[in-house]
Image (cartoon, rainbow, N blue to C red):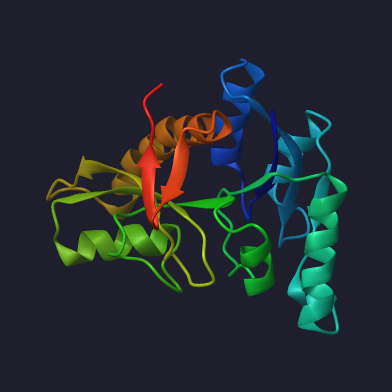
Length: 207
């Protein structure tokens, strides 16, 4: 069973989707802590309702970047963290953390990368850009994390149609359904050691 740390900045709906599958016994892992860059995000309430420890860790709390990284690494080490899940976490992950958890950290992005990715492309910003572009398909991307925004090896992408009449809010709803369906599934596969990096390519093994 893998020890999972969840990083989230907001209400934590993706964390909740994953946690529900853990509660059902469908994922061979457990969330050992939830970390946020905010002081009291909604995701903390969801975690505390299950007695899961929460930690607010923000770069602004520390005099130096090294102190910030040390706090993150020590917190994760205290819980013997095996894997990190970014579930709506908006801060760039420091390079030392990426290196320590190389290929042991994943993120979900509400668009089909490399389109509509990078700094500033998060939440409704993404969906507004999708609608304004006039494209007829969007989706989700689940990928490994490197030291750049939305740039690591892609694990899974799923598409959904964008109708001409769709507003950004409608697109957001469609994409969120994909997130809640496929993010827990990828976490399940990871916890079963079915997703691997071979020759810098993602390989998903049959079960």
